[in-house]
Length: 65
Image (tube, rainbow, N blue to C red; front, side):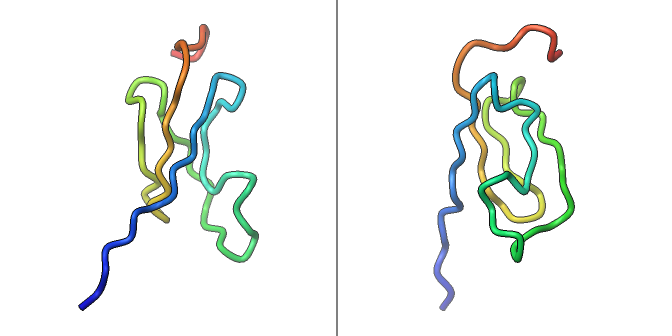
């Protein structure tokens, strides 16, 4: 049967905000509509289109709440 794949993990820091997918490192051919991700409050989120996981590491930034 089909195998389960672990989706890629992208670690973000305060300088990477606002968080969005597709991110800058993704190839153009795999693009989907840009979606902004509320990562600071959750700590880790998954893109609803492609399943890429994003994790925020570091102190919460000021002015982003």
